[in-house]
Image 1 (cartoon, rainbow, N blue to C red):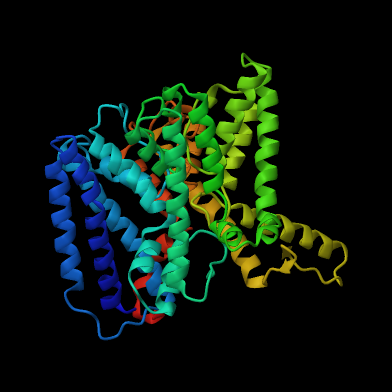
Image 2 (cartoon, rainbow, N blue to C red):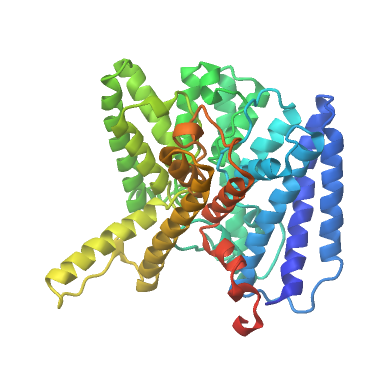
Length: 482
């Protein structure tokens, strides 16, 4: 491993985080808040750490695949540790483990919270809390690739370790240009949502931070009752539509931009995504009609919560923990499914589900007729066997990590619904679960051990397991595996 290059790159990213913290610091000045000291001290600490790491550029600038995974994992952990300091130093989250959990939840776009009362936080901290969603949505290292030139091979190893999905490719020949295109689309869509929310009468600050949380599919709201607190059907529908928009593979938006509409709309993953959303909304709406909800409210609440859960955003407009069992079971399935690959959403990803289903059907056909030659095809293209295998390994590892986490968290002695869905919500980067961690609950009462395990789950889920697992394995550090 090229240790010097690893820490050199991490140092550059810490300097970027220091620069990003200037925005909430300016907010503290504008609103005359005492949090300015906390932001200033954090910026100073990040600057010192970053400059120490980059003071001397390594002679050997090659980064291998293993190095890329380690850079990504360490970066996200260190960013969360430093990013927690404003909450901790200001005293608004006096327990550092809680502050770390909240910040990890922000950067990983999970939206799980330990806060019992949100509206009492200063606006600068509310801004930083939602801004972490926006930063983490596309990935901080993708942002760094976009603004800082590096070799294509080096960038690819880093981008592959951070961008969600079974495969990672370039939109154009230069990876740096691809990163810029992705961030350009991201910024434009965020700005459009802000305009739509402003048009509906939402205050400017609320529109900005809500759009940050929607764009990153994170779900940190600035009202105690989440989006329900606005009591606005218009705002609900705008946010619901944009959650679905940000759950789509950004490559398709690029294809639309270059006028390849037909090819974009033929995406098999997009069709599955739309089909799952439609079927889920219909089934949940029909189940809600059997309760106290009218037909209109049934479809409205079903559409919003399906959009929120499948994109792993986590906003809520109603306590869905009180819904019929079938509705809650569908939401749990959507927690596992997640959004499209190459989006800001979490979960297993629709593309992986397609490959899993098709590979399962292929194996059944081969069992019936062993001599037949069957391949897995997506968008009429044959999926390489290594990709099919990697998807199966990912799914198995995902379930093993989730199961191990549930066993550890079970030590807290909570009911099985809370224990299971807390892990599902964190590893899938969803936010709320069911039971005590439902839309009206939080993670404040979990033990320190459970919060650390769930923080690991959030990071592992956002980085798609391998970077975090590799970081804690002998393969990352032993010279034997260099």
